Image (cartoon, one colour):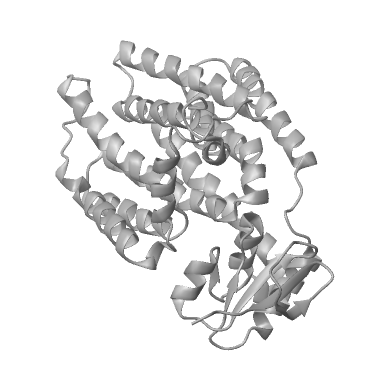
Length: 381
């Protein structure tokens, strides 16, 4: 998109907007497949598109945001397999998993959990003699093969950008880092839809006349929602990002509520849809009004200039997390967060990239802009 419009920043924004618009499509198709309701499909799409989660993700966590398209594609193909187990759907789900793995580790772990839980729960429901076709787990084999391969490759190679190290960091932080002290702005809506999801799931199980796919995916979404709202258990530095993934169960259950009432009069459906969407959209508008980009267009242009003038064989050291994310998004150059990683990589020279005014060790300037500064770092052999 950047090449088409001739502006890397505008192209970046257009690409992100397109990825978000596309992400809602497999979600909506999944809801229509499960509920057999077009209204439910539209409600889930609107809930996803205008939620505070989506606006915040798009503002700060771009790779997370782009990964949602592949997460929802994976969910859609898994649900298709639950209706009619087949290798074609399983292979498409496996391809989606590969794409998620190449995008972001958190999105991949969510897709992994759903891919494992959905067939297992469906198998248990079959054993419980729910009214449905016989489930065969063999067609799901491609999904599990890909899961194992991606985990192995992600652990042993840089194919996932070293993101597997973040998993170890998360595990080590459990119990050692304090949890969030207050709910985020979207916390109340998240917990409300967790409760709604529990009621939908229990009602579907009691009736037993509901489609097994609805029961199965509702149970999976309740489990995921419990994880996304585990505020007392998960360290605050991870929890704020994890809580944003409530966009998945909230969007799902928004559609399921309408699907449960699809036989009601149109006026009733419209009233319930409005009741569901009003707090989500209002919360989203409130978030959109206060959220600001972590860097300006001027800063982005200076980062691009540093990348264009970086000596061949050199790399960038960017310690500040949001600043590093944008450097990775905008440049093809190698970017590191720790000096030890940059030194061991073998790239030379190492250029320290910081925001203007930040403290730094004595070093020869490489670039001094209005917003950012870059310095040559001396490496002792």
